[in-house]
Length: 233
Image 1 (cartoon, rainbow, N blue to C red):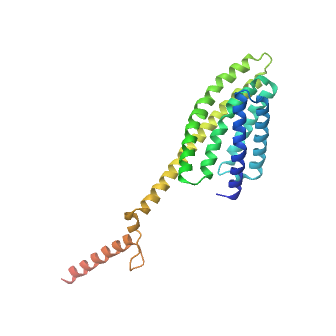
Image 2: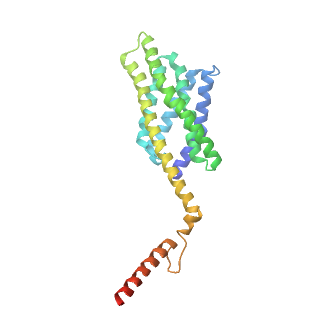
Image 3: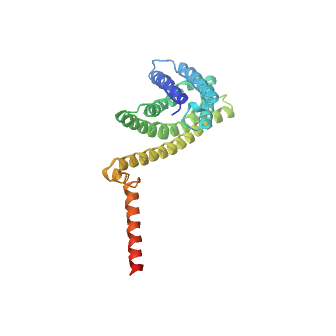
């Protein structure tokens, strides 16, 4: 992993939990939800600039991440015009806990930590990104329709942004499954290579090759000898 990506991950391992705790505080009434919206906007804007200037700061798909930030920024601007929606920033913002588990799994390399964060990642992914986010679409539509002076484009920006974020979550699910399958295949190969049978296949022989190569060569030599004997007879 590139150094820029490692630095970006560790900065987010500090900032993302702060955002997550702020959303919980906003939902529980311990913090004004408008503060969460402003903090979230600052975080998204700052991360957008970082990734735009240094695409290698993320493991892959920097363009997709930038597009995600743009959509998130648009959605976060809606409560600025309709303050009663600040509370929903906290609801949507809970997903940052899932982001934290993803980054933590990537940066903590011990087997126990990876297993723990992987479980936390998938459990929060399914409940937040695949259940909570789609449920927020009709809620946002209802809330915007209840606003008397809301322009049609404001409703479109609010509901449309949430729908797009749901689409991003589906893409993220597909990528996560693909990466999981790659890791599993890689681990299976390592396990096979570490097994006695796997090691035997790669033991050096007197010919300078592996055991498997030596056996193949020996079989070829034997076959050639038999052919010569048959011709001599």
